[in-house]
Image 1 (cartoon, helix red, strand yellow):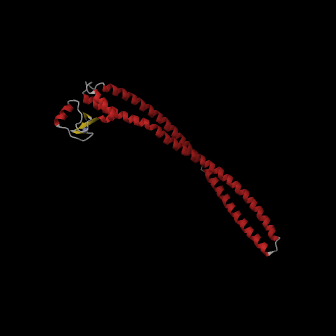
Image 2 (spheres, helix red, strand yellow):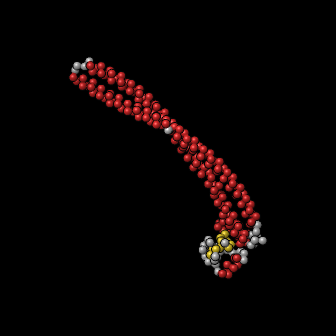
Image 3 (tube, rainbow, N blue to C red):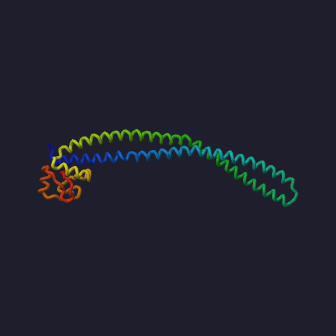
Length: 232
Ligand SMILES: [Zn+2]
């Protein structure tokens, strides 16, 4: 039969392992949320790329309409200029023509800019589609792996809990209430290893006599920190 210190060593290992498993299981939803946010960002970037092409196409059409109007206006002003003999009116028409020409230039620049943007963004579509497809595939892969990992963690947890229960049956009856109380309060930290002569929890050195007793497998709590001890 294993000594109580052997039992504590195993209980300490199992309870530490179980605590890590539970932490990882509990972290799962938060990790998933992060991945969902990443996917959503990728979805928005993909949508925005296509939306921007639509916007530039719309702007180009509007600018082309305005350009046509400006051309018509310029032709009309040109005719009017020819029929003007009053100096003041002539100057006013010239001024109007210069203004319309500036607007025409502005519109032509804007149309050219829209065309360039549409061309570049259209050329980038295959890359954008690939980025979006990759993001979706990465998320699907994450989901698959996360589900497998969760399954493994849950199985490990169930097995470790069963083993812990069985191991704890090895704790002598007179010690069990104290053990239960301490693990309830401190979890795996209710127990500590002793390496050499030193308690691993509080670094206090034991007397030689205590070390001999501990190695013999006797129940002992650290005189300083109160943890149930086992030799490492
Ligand atoms: Zn201690």
